Image 1 (tube, rainbow, N blue to C red):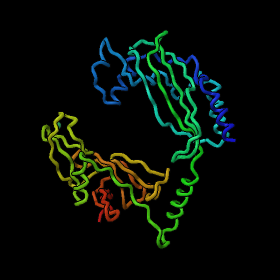
Image 2: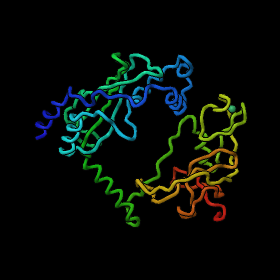
Image 3: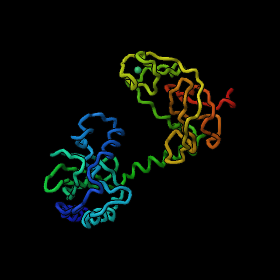
Length: 317
Ligand SMILES: [Zn+2]
């Protein structure tokens, strides 16, 4: 049965995935500026009268936006439908590969065609079993090929093993008094060379804020250099522990092991002027408010993990 499916899937190779697509906007300076700001890319090649678009914006000029794509071919939908029917209803994007052949400049009007380049054999991955589908988009200005954009997805049936594990984790959470069951642990922070000092401070119940010795600007999270003056020299100041809730969200979904939704995740502004993400404890999630004064505490989560958290000042012990 699966062999028959593989043959049918292979037959889609070389068929169009999108035909005669047209960029919704010509290449333009405002979109380039916004992209550069979002990416923090200050390369002078992207501004001024001779500006080119950052090559990695290639896909931007072909995107359908919220109103969706036009020109998607029947063949691509048919291929995905066939995989859905075969039980491969889940999808994950696995990789993207681009080639840049000519620079794009403001005013260029982009057209594109996409082809179903390949459909893999049936593969079993950690996520499940399915097929990798690769499409290649050729982007043109006039008759010139300016770049190609290869995009690969895995259409798969989720592994049953994973579902069972998730069920077990849910059951464990719902039966807290059972002996011999492992309580899920809070995720570990990623400690690296740049932030090791912060986590060492937390371990000692001290919240250390980095401070640039060039211009005196405090910063958090810890970074190798100062965004204000570029200096790589810094020292630390210990936070007084006073702060206010600058903003917050309440997490309802998705569930994570070791977390018990709903709970509030807050961006706390410290008295020293930096902001950090943490939990607000000692108050129901729906009583957290922007502007609420809070006080730092250290929570010993387990033998290896201490986390800085905040408690509303009125409720502080
Ligand atoms: Zn500085």
